[in-house]
Length: 462
Image (cartoon, rainbow, N blue to C red):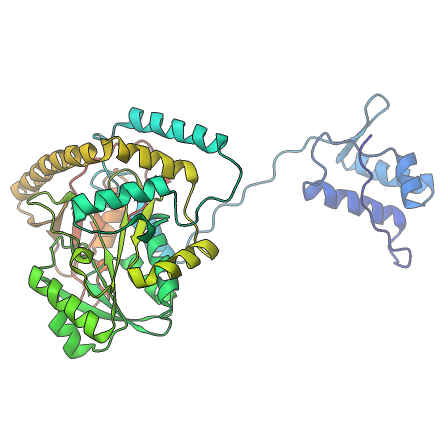
């Protein structure tokens, strides 16, 4: 017999008791408390439960039968009738011109030439799947306790070893905090620094999602131009002095692909140490330099403990992992651990264990070498193709920038191209204002297989 319905009757109300019972059962059906096929108590039992006359409940049941909401049978009792599933409301589209509309357009795909999504040709998918299956079994057999909010020690050790070899950063596993991608690392850093109401230097052009994240943290933005040597520190000191934070992409400036020169790196670090300014180093694509050996990370030169280094595996393995890391300066290690424990713990355990095993067995470094060879060949072919058609181009790290005439909407062009499975990113949203923006297309030198129709699957640029 079904559990008694929880029906509250108001005997002082003007609504008849039969109608109150009928409406209560309808509410239970529509809210999913009573699912199709669920058995209702007999009208005799429900009358006894509610302390009303049997005829009162029977009349309510008869009205529900008439409305085809329940089915009565001597053999099976009174049950909720099968009903068509509720109509699924169409997903509300973001407001035109809003940040979320831009976010959806920049991450729509998968598509050919799409930025921020790694090619899968060089990823040993079968091997990584095997490693991840081992990690899932290890997770399921582990004792049921809260994991380390900073991330699994195995992964933090592998990241520290990788950074020492590939990025020149000497750090201990205790300085590593595993995050949900770059955005998770930036959010963690902003919580730790507590710079609400402060000023931040941002590169112009620069990653639009980072800018908006800083704005959501109630920071005022100072756009600093980028030239051939990277962020223009002299311009910043002259026009926007006394910032609290500087966010830079020194390895491959996004989206121009330039490397911050050694002279400017040293100038930036010396000034930050003297003035007490924090630096967030977005290590965007630094491990995938195609034309030369990657420059060491900015954090490798930091003697004043002012650089917070943020990296991710989104561009090298997959954005679907949502896996990244922060290297905390020694004075902030305890604070990072506290904020991670209370507000931003590390992501799914099995993903961490899989990545740790993938790195420990040497597969990750081999994967990076294969990626660089493939991307170099694809970028060369893309440049040749575009130059043959007289486009004005320049290399930008892994990408190729195509200059468009003034007044041509790069956003409108990319929207039309996505319908054909082509996903270059518009250049103009990377600039901080329409006055400084230039129109162009950023073509990633990576060919992504189009497995779904455009707009039905999303990737992540960071």
